[in-house]
Each structure stands twice: as structure tokens, then as C-alpha cells.
Image (cartoon, rainbow, N blue to C red; front, side, top):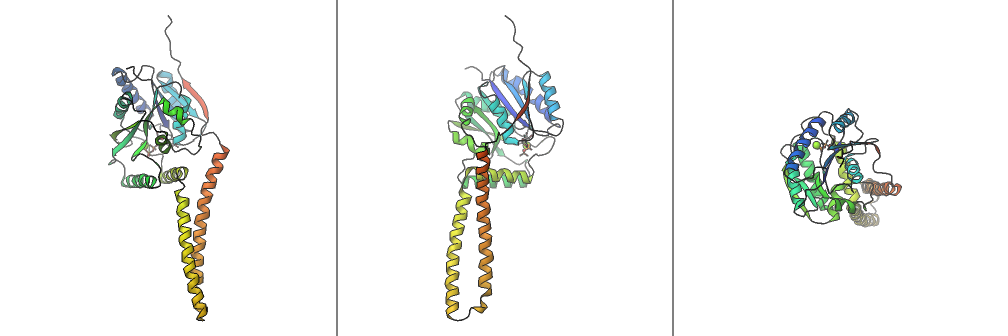
Length: 323
Ligand code: UDP
Ligand code: MG
């Protein structure tokens, strides 16, 4: 079987401290993969600069000038991790056979790439990189991540446990993906929805070697919330249940108040007025806020703004030998 033409997509946001090392490591690994006949010689690595504020883009340009196997895409500003990945994938969907997305910080074990390619050769259309050991992550990151996956599953979003965005996708998957038009992107939820045969490759998550995480708590929570509300209306249903529950309590309270009135003890009823009032106004606020959240999402989708804007692409054209 012919080796596949692979495009590795690497989103980069303020990664100047590690980028050169990442490039060197990937380049060496490509040589190895080529020797193993797992990838074709015209396979490439695409670095997507997601509006970094440091020297990341200058480094990418230098890399691309010296290495014909590297491509650089510069987004016009910071669009976020998911959009950066998407930019690389959609820009080149028709030019490669298979695609792997990997973070720039080398936290994902690159040895898994070879295993993914083997699975692909055996017929898998999607191969998920799954962390089976998160002992290098902080306790906090581990616990929050685990509760995130559990919660997503519970709400009916088909996410793969402990799989981030380290994944192989066949070109066919991306062609189908092009029909998913949502602006609020949560790739981990969409890819399983596309179907086809999928496999998993397990690996150990390493520590970030340099630089710091670009996902501070606030961004992580936002990402999780986006994942939930883009994929599930369960929170809205929860509000409905909550509303029904409140309604029955209110009925009971009214009966109580009615009886108290008949027995002439209404003056002492301050608590029974104030307490339900605060409780129900709180519940109302939650419900309105949640609905607002979904309405806002609809608004975003209706506007249909571009998910990313490419400012520039650097790629050394392949030197073809004249016949
Ligand atoms: N990243 C990006 N845009 C952003 C945030 C992050 O392209 O707005 C990239 C970042 O450079 C890295 C990957 O996404 O390659 C994952 O980020 P990070 O390693 O900081 O996340 P963590 O591994 O801590 O969850
Ligand atoms: Mg990381």
C-alpha cells in the first residue's frame, strides 16, 4: 500500500519558547516515518499562528524559509485554538490524504503519530489520541478535565474520554465536516458525530517543556461551557424541571397560606411571603439567563461570521526536477 500524504496541523499561540524545538522534533520524526514508508515524501507540517503577541510568527517564517516541508499560516488575530486548527485543516483539505492535529507544546507523545498512521493504513478513518495517564497534569487540571468529560457524556454529547485535539482524520472526514456550518466550534463533539470507523491510540501525556498553558481557568471554563451549550439543550430542560419543581412548591405554599388565612393568623406570615419571593425571583433569573445564553448562541450562528481570517501563508514551492 502506498504511504499516505500527511499534513500535520500545529496551532501556535505565543509559543516562541518551544517552537524551534517542536519543529526540530517533528522534522526528525518525519524522516523516521518516511523511512518506515508510513508517510509520503511530500507530507508537510503546517504551523498556524493564532495571533501570537510574541515572536512566534517570525520563527515560523524562518522555519518555512529553511524547511520546504513546513508551511506557515498567519491568522489576522487570535481566533482561539479550535479555529486555528480549523484554518489549517480547511485550507488544505483537498491537498492531502490524511491530517493529524497536535499541540505545539509537545505534551502529546509524538510516537503516537506512527501508531495512528498504522491504524489509518488498516482502515480507520478517525484515530483519537487518548491520554491513559495524566499523572503529569496537576491535580486540579485532572479533576476538572475528568468532571468535564463525565458531564458532557451525561448530557448526551458523544465525546471520547480523555481525548483532546490530538487526532488523525482521513480526508473524507474533513469533506463531510465541511457540511457542519456552526460558528461555535467544538471539534471534539463534532468529529464523533460524523461517524465512520474510528480507533483509539493510547499515550502518556507529558509535561509542557517550555512556556505556559494558554488555557487559564477562565478560558477552560468558557471552553467547557461552550462545549455544553453548543451540543446540548439539556441545561434548558434542567431549568424546566426546576421550574416545575418550584411551581409545585408554590402550590403547597399557597395552600398553607390559604389555611393560615382561614385560621386568622396571616400577620405572622412575613417569612412565608419573603422567602418564596426571593427564591422564585432567583429561579427566574437563572432561567432567563440560561435562555439568554442560547439566544445569544443563535444570534452568533445567524450572523455567520467567518471562523478565522487568514492574513498570510508562507510555503516554499516544491522544487520540481526538470525532465
Ligand atoms: N492555542 C492557540 N490559540 C489559543 C490558545 C492556545 O492556538 O488561543 C494553542 C497553543 O499554542 C497550543 C494548543 O493550542 O499549541 C493547546 O494549548 P495549551 O497547551 O496552552 O493548552 P493545555 O495543554 O494547557 O490544555
Ligand atoms: Mg498543552
